[in-house]
Length: 339
Image (cartoon, rainbow, N blue to C red; front, side):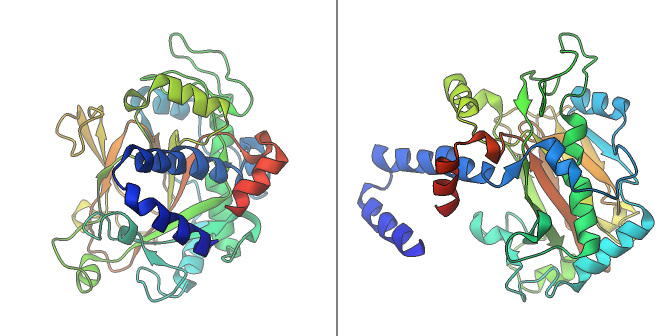
């Protein structure tokens, strides 16, 4: 597979920066990659079924309404103190936590223009231990709690003007800023990210301290052609709608703003704004252990600040949105899974 991709890359090199090359990039990023992604996704209710330890809904109706209105919501206590301790102990047991020492962790910035963009190390954990990295029990509980959140959004009634009573099964009718009914496919894999303290991180990096510079997780609707968006939705292509983060930091860590490590949201920043100067409000969220944060993947510009805590800053992330694998014909699913 790698050899075939290498041959294709060499054949395409003479066409770099031409219409042929740009069309090939478009097919890779907007068609093949998202379609292969949904093969490894499942419906919100199926994702919820994995969490047999849930005490009840993680989100109240008011919190879902707040997410719709403001574009974000913060919910504490999604993990019990015991669940948090076990999840963090499992994370700490992964070799090379916050470093590049273990081959299962990789420096995320290496593929995104350098480590001046982001300074975290990441690994991926999959539901039911699919793939190389099986989650241990503590991490499995956190993973399933995070993935189960999608079921609470899917089909939830909207009290906003113009909102439907309930979206179709497995869908919701979006944020108030841009209403459109969207499917909420849940990826089997979630990203576990670790940010080392500033001193440790700078020992192996050049340049000023960095956590993760301002960015958006999804594509703003204003820059996606409407015909393209409709075509992608009809084909079942996955797109990020809701970013869900669950922090696995030690109890008491990151309780003070002076420690750093905050998630910063630049609300209502213009789609073309990449630094937050046009935002209506700058919100700082402390990465307290057991805290869940949901926000609009398409519209909310956000960043992660560097920190000086005595331990790594650790978080699970799940990007919710798009169709799930069962919506594709089996032959196409097998082909995309191979590619």
